[in-house]
Image 1 (cartoon, rainbow, N blue to C red):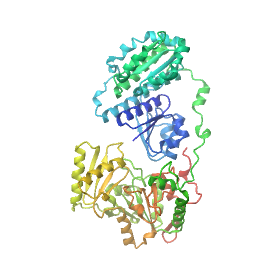
Image 2: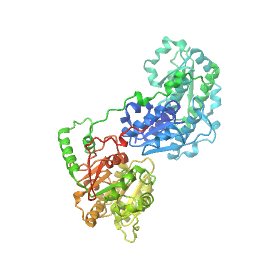
Image 3: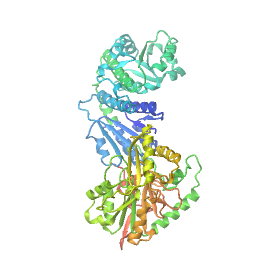
Image 4: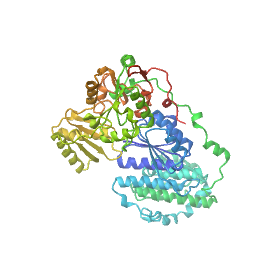
Length: 618
């Protein structure tokens, strides 16, 4: 999966390093971006995880980028910061589904934030190194870093003449290997932000496409610094022989584009910038910042950059996408919209006595950590239960849901809740017993043996949890997308002649269900036990298209999606605004539920209510 790294100044360097390493290890094209790119076009983050990086968390640009990304499109947002309490973390506290990674920096940073930059860069580099089984390759001390086998200090000792020349000329052209983009980006950032030199960046071949005219027409203003690694050393040596002899050149050669070599390059260029600053007679870490500079930095972006225009789409596009009809296919909105309007009219006319939810991704964030629903969801569930509405929750999880709900819901509403745990295999209540586990399924035992074999072969499986006689739940290593791994598991079961229709996936696992197990069992139980007409039940889930694990829920006549709709045109629509997904979409729906007499309710999708979740976070 591709990723987007977002940062300004030194944090942009970390974002660039993150994307560099992700591309090198995964082959997935990834993009370092400035906060303004996300602010102006938050749809950039609609399909890829976003990593927002800010050392102190005071940057107004990154805060606005967070709000736009989370509120308008992003599915997965991560924040890397070095302060536990900051304007950024305060903004995070008001949002849902943000993965926050705080690594506190005890030493105060200077103007160029080199301490936090280096710490965050090392964290990112170590993470990718360890994922690749290379955690022992990193030296224990900065002094032990090397450039192509030689100590950094030895390389610096060769730079004195170049430093004098480049300072006298006031301009440097930095040519670089694409594998060393993060080093080049940080060098330009420091030279520019400390007002030391004018710096031009171009990869080694882009430099050959016209930029060489600077050497012909303004040779007295030019010096060249080349950042290369082994794959481009030969090319750069050849190109260097063609340059005018009057142009000062300096080469920094790293051992490779491996994580530890990138860190060595970052450290080396920081020392080089320090030498340039000393030659000029400046302290780049303590500049005199003018008042207009502070005013520029703290401009109120929310005030001056308008929000993206909200689409009036209320479900058509999500149906087209789940059917595979994506841009540039010509959407036949007339036919689709007629089906949508007919469904909305029918839905809003109906009175309901029960509502059945998926859990992860619907009532709570679909993350690896096991946590209860947020207070905003709990308040809505309590409101329904207090009114006598039957509330069902169907989940692939087990008893942890009972424990969570016992801890967060008033005891007087417990009887209104019906639980379908292990994907509906075990029907129980909030205070009901756990299944005995005495019965077994040979089908599930066979599936378990097959999946363990895959794990032994190196398939990135983290856990295999078999809950007899209901399901086998397979989780993968952090960052592995289940929509791709579903096919790996499915192919292995197909080779064994097993039934693939029993396989479903959520955002965090692939589940293989025993015969007769499914979330629709909870609906059937509510119908039978409470004598409720099937049309008096509303269902809600996030993975509505098979093999999504909510496909059975959203096959129900009256059903709503909070993310991926059903492929059926007569049900399972996502009717919340396009930018609201998962828990945010659930809240949007719940705020539109109107309680009626006799323990019934209706839902009004087409009203003009402006809820708290429609407003921009502050």
